[in-house]
Length: 115
Image 1 (tube, rainbow, N blue to C red):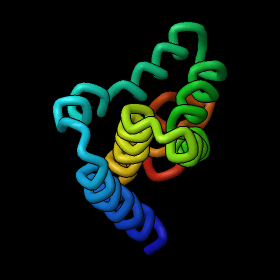
Image 2: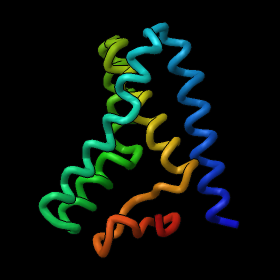
Image 3: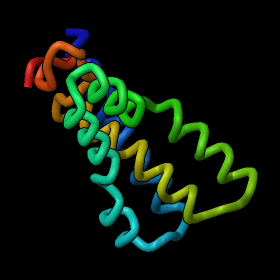
């Protein structure tokens, strides 16, 4: 049941991100252009699994994008806000389909399932 809740939570985050993105009035091409950018963090796996999992996990937790959302709202930077919301949407999308945070043992081992 808890695994299903994490998938549902990811879907709620994704849908909520779409709603808020729509509210800020930035073009949707920006959203689609940057939606998969956090996956570039997989390049850390070129070094090794330990480094790769750490870099991947840093870019696939909500901490940095939520901080950037607050920061961009304070500075009234709509583009930064749009990119931050897109980042949150990416993480929610990943969780919805079962991609979770990575264990250093193997890229396919995540906190949600083995991919």
